[in-house]
Image 1 (cartoon, one colour):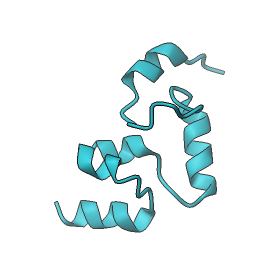
Image 2: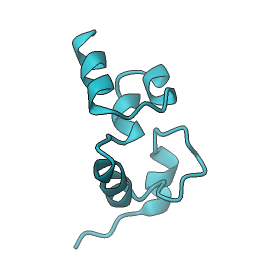
Image 3: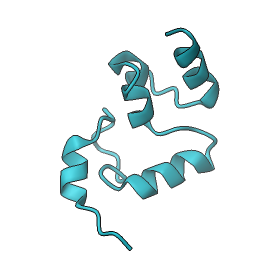
Amino acid sequence: MVDCNQEELKNKCACTYSSCSRRGKCCKCIEYHLSMNELPGCIFAKISKGAERSYNRSFKYFAKLVLDQ
């Protein structure tokens, strides 16, 4: 198993929800969002900061953003 530097990941995390307990714990974040049929905020941040700040993590919203580019 690969060790993650969670402090480094926490500092680089693009999600604006800074009080999240999963911040810097990518595996936990992905697992959490996928269990709710969502994508993590960092995926949206790659498109735009506004998209990430919307807190809409749905696949449908992500697809719309990608298609609108």
